[in-house]
Amino acid sequence: MPNLTTALLDPILTADPAGPRITYYDDDTGERIELSAVTLANWAAKTANFLCDEFALMPGARVSVLLPAHWQTAAVLLGAWWAGLDVTLDADPDADAALVTADRLDDVADAPEVAVLSLDAFGRPVPDLPVGVTDYATAVRVHGDQFRAVASGPTALDGRGVDEVLASARAVAAEQNVTGSDRVLSTRTWSSADELIAGLVSVLAVGASLVQVTNSDDAALTRRVDSEKVTARLGG
Image (cartoon, rainbow, N blue to C red; front, side, top):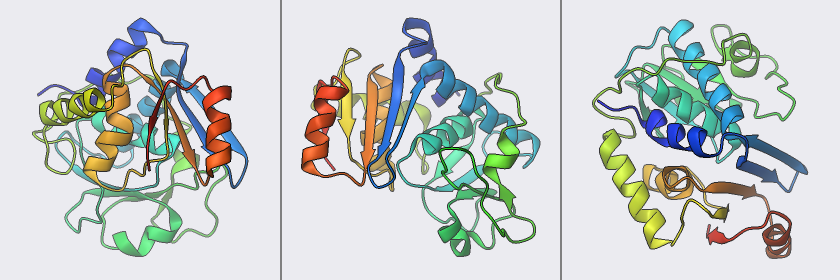
């Protein structure tokens, strides 16, 4: 089976490795983080290595990802797909592992392996984690930033295969008139497969650049259009 991350990142890494690929804003905290394709790929590789080496996940294993629309979530998803894993955005009791924020720990209490993300811009760990729960920020940083992609399992996202996810993503991009030359502003959440495809995968699938904004208002979004040279918008 093809690999979803390879299909998304390889064309971008070839065409424009250094340009901005994901720019993330949190207007509550003032955070702004910008990642090139190379940096995004490095974080994804670290995540893939972490999932394979520390959680011993093999292609086809199922992993619950209970995380908000965030640049670190993009790295987690791309890392999981690079390792050939099937991602679910629900608290699946049959999942082999889970990556969550601290407030979702109770939802994955039965998962064999759990990593918690602080989503802190400076990589601060989550304090006072239960025994047996891994702090993602601490664990992932020691892993290599290169990963040799493996073939995907039969499904990649909530039971959908790689080809189906890519076809849906490209269809959404066409409906939104998003092309590879666009700088796309989005406030969409990524809490379901359809939302994730529309808000993230569709942008990467056509080689566009994403400006993901959270906790914003109309005035701030209008300023972002100018400051980030936005050429297309996705609604919330």
